[in-house]
Length: 165
Image 1 (tube, rainbow, N blue to C red):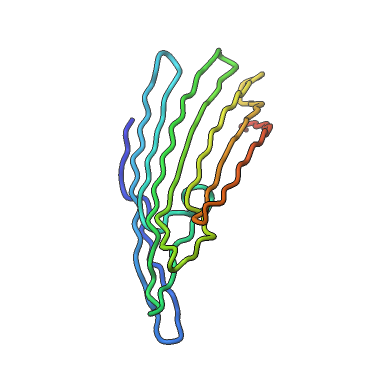
Image 2 (image 1 turned 90 degrees about the horizontal axis):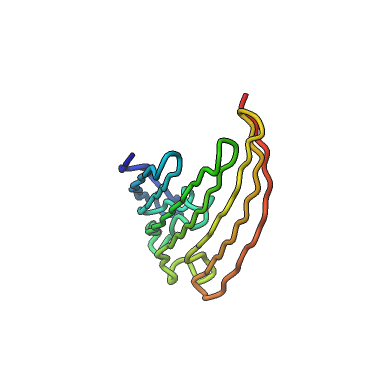
């Protein structure tokens, strides 16, 4: 399975005291999956474009900034993720995934207290005691770095329960 294309076209508009200004963004992506053995698989995705931060990391990056003339300067961003899913048996599976994203911020316009990059690692195990039910546990590690050089780390464990009806 391989897919590529344009995943967003949006017109951005800013209203200033003088006149409305606009710019258009467009994101590109490519995804692929590869079956390994009987049930395991490897999947990856790459993204690139202006103002696509809302699609990467839950609106992690600024769309752009206005310059002194009221012109919109959209922020270029890119990111990638890769994940390997292993099926242990008919009732249990695990996924290990890694991702990163980066923004080319214009710090002269947006300042230095804006996100510059993110990285994360996810590892989970999901058990299906009966058909259409899943009980899972996941560990997440993440890191954010700002243009100022400051950074922060996240470490979280979460549990989930799903039933498909």
